[in-house]
Length: 223
Image 1: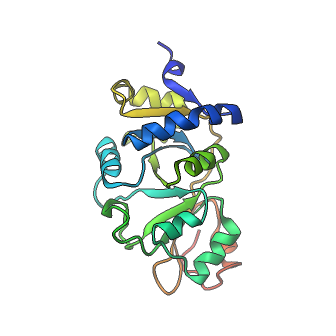
Image 2 (image 1 turned 135 degrees about the horizontal axis):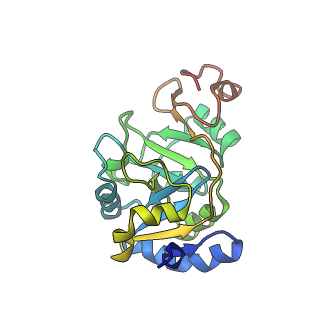
């Protein structure tokens, strides 16, 4: 059986439109989704406790490694009680949608503790992937995000690589896979901790520290 028979096409605008209803239903039923991003294929769920715990179990994720959230508009931050400082808002205005992840305060009582990182905040990125933007908007909620690979295996760049690693989970209906084609190599997103008085780069990536300092001159760290 070809791996293409167990994936949902998610490349053209028409394919994305056709996929939205079944994908939203799968997520609302607390399923896990594999999807293309602007960097690699990722796993995600809705942000409720039960959905997040399914993703933790699937990935065998240690407690110290949270998942980030992907959003499609800034209103989703407000609904979850996440806050942007003036400096963080300036970075978001310049680099979102794009490969910049911001660790933000807030969300207490609205988001599972598993999503909160060692800095005490929630990592969020406004994805520039057009199909994913449409999906998150249709869902009306952020998607959790982590790489769609087993430990020790490089991140998946094609849907077929996800199928090869997770066939059993697909067959029992836990995992649904979107096929967005082969993704070109690209650096990860830059991660900036926005929890303290001064913003700090905690993972170098696609947006350099020099570029970020054009907006926030006293940024700590390097990238």
